[in-house]
Length: 193
Image (tube, rainbow, N blue to C red):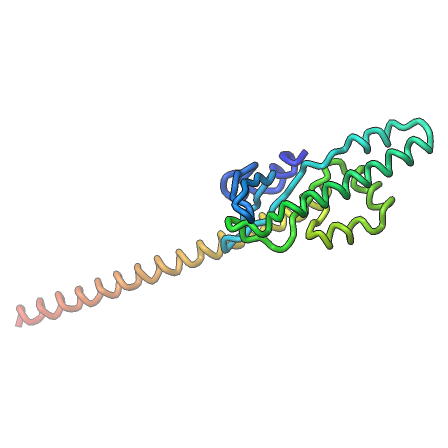
């Protein structure tokens, strides 16, 4: 699901993002975020997608209200546990990354995201305090398309600068040509007199 969202985002693998790149962590340990999104000016956003949805699957297939309630509790505990573990990785403190103070935690099934947020009103606050932003396919796609738009604007700005630079070079060469041509005309006029 994460790969499909990335493909639909308009970003290009190897240019605007990397998958499972091994980098140095805060204490020199090796870390491997699922996705590193590159932003202009050497900045990054990290996406992690290793959330377990086993409890959610049990919740959906639960036959009684008691079973569903039990599995929902497990689902919420699983998400909170992953938030805590992800927070402990401290991707934002890696010397190889220039990230904001948060990591995006991707929950690949929209419905599992929705029921979790409805069942636990404090889930977003809990995650935010741990410097984690929980995203679903829809919210991640919107975020990535915004980043894609930023890259397009950056590219257009870069192209405009290059056009201005080349125009200046062309103008200088043309001015030099006109000056040289004027000197040739003067010399021809002197030779003819």
